[in-house]
Image 1 (cartoon, rainbow, N blue to C red):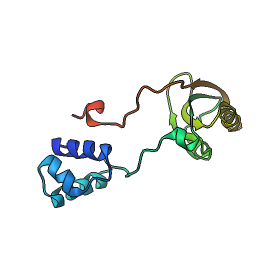
Image 2 (cartoon, rainbow, N blue to C red; image 1 turned 45 degrees about the horizontal axis):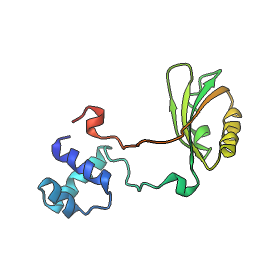
Image 3 (spheres, rainbow, N blue to C red; image 1 turned 90 degrees about the vertical axis):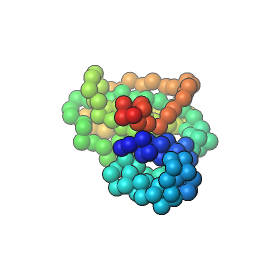
Image 4 (cartoon, rainbow, N blue to C red; image 1 turned 180 degrees about the vertical axis):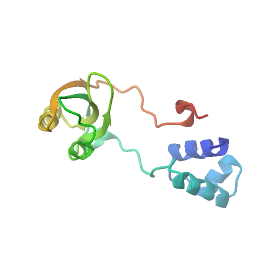
Length: 150
C-alpha cells in the first residue's frame, strides 16, 4: 500500500458514500483511477466490506460489556456457538487467564444477565468475568497509522 491507498482508505472511513470523483480529487487521480485503486483494495482484502455506522443506543444497545470467558476445555473452534447469540458483537480467542473475549451490547443489565446465562450454557464454559462500560471516550476504526503501516 502506498500513500494514495492510505488517503483513499481514510476518505472512505470518514464517508463510504463518497463518489469516485471526490475520492480522485482528494488524491489527485481521475475518478476511474480512484475506482481502480478501490477495486484493488477490495480484491486484496484490505477493504472487507462497506457499511454504515449506527448509534447502538438508538437501536436499544445502551449497555456495552466485555466478557472474559473461562473454559475447562479448548473452545477455540466454537465461533458458531458464540455467533448464535445476537447480542454478542465480537468474539476473540485470547491468551491469558481466560480463553475467549466477547463484546456484547444489550438494552439493559437484565438482558446482559440473560446473555451471560446463554454463554454459561455453552459446553466447556466454566466462568466469566464481566466489565460493563460506563462511558466511551472514543472509538475509532483501524488505520494504517494505528497499525504501524503508515
